[in-house]
Length: 279
View 1 (cartoon, one colour):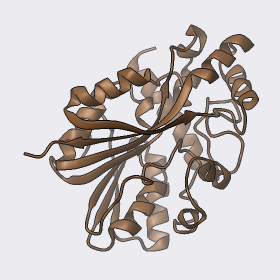
View 2 (spheres, helix red, strand yellow):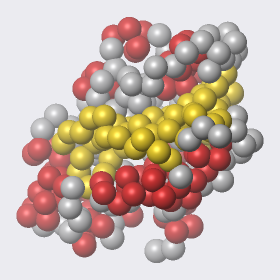
View 3 (cartoon, helix red, strand yellow):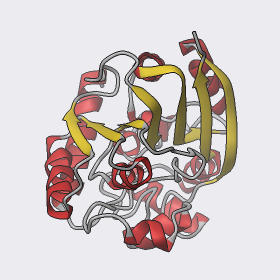
View 4 (cartoon, helix red, strand yellow):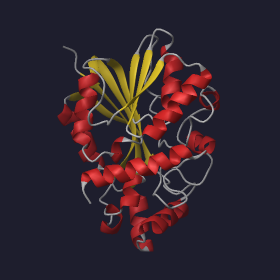
């Protein structure tokens, strides 16, 4: 399948989620996936958000799509400009908007019109004035050079078919000294071929994930410095435990139980920070 076909499949998967009241970022058609079958609130608490975070965002912005909390270590300051790569319904954007205040600005970029519609509706209903949502691809950001103090992303870069370009784009839009804060899924070892070739697993944040060392190398190759893994853990693709993970993969990819188990064991959730060097 071509990169464009993969991108179209990913867009269709997330458009469908945007039209629903809840979501999951797991294998398409699994009924669960890397966000499981749990409610978005439970998922978000599991990956690092607090009750205060969940209460602070517009209703309908948290679809349970994250694999971590990129804002947990971001140390945003009043007046900062933040760009969110793959902003979805706006969950992390709205949290960032509160932290940067009225003099700050948050730009969410997403390639799925249905997600943008939902995010813009959420912003309008809650009267959030310092957030804007732009249609675009994270490989070609609709953002000017040296705009952002911080670039964030949550379980999205793994979906790109050109991750090195994503990191180069993130570097481009950052101001000198600006920071990249990412939560994403990576691999501790290669996936079984049956999972790696699955479009459903790609749309579900799994088949497109890079080996962790390759992921970090791509960030460095883009020109970032001080690249650091701040946290790392296993990730339950299917829900609350490893059995759910394997079941989700079995249902989505038709792989064997042994291959599903190997794939589930390979997936890691990481929080990565990096910095653009000062001029």
